Length: 177
Image (cartoon, rainbow, N blue to C red; front, side, top):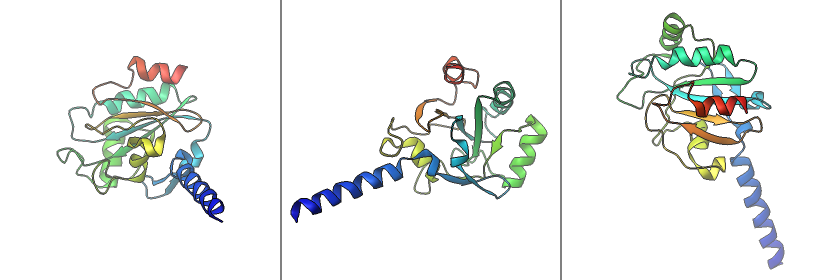
């Protein structure tokens, strides 16, 4: 009986860990208010970026769009607007979408505004920043425009700090290899 209970506990714990750490089980709401399932990203490389419209790094939108245009067949870019750093993303989803389109011609996928740190951290960012979820590493979002790289199998393979630009060698190597 005791062995059966231990076996059951191990199986439940293993199942819970596997469920918790699966990138493709994540969901988010896009900037238009529609649910987006990360299951749609199977077999694709993904770059996830927390964005802000009133930041010194905001011009990275232009480079992210260029990266999207150049590697659309190899990479999905997903922007997550967040207001966690000095209130540099104060707008509504509608205002953010308009700003991105008007100023940078953004056509890559943008999600609804979320929190990328703190007690109200979105589940996507819990997965990205906690090794217990992503099985790769713990990290902390240090500022706007931190970029996370996920391979075709849904594995976190690394991240680029905010000051590392979209065409940084680390990101290009991730896309091309």
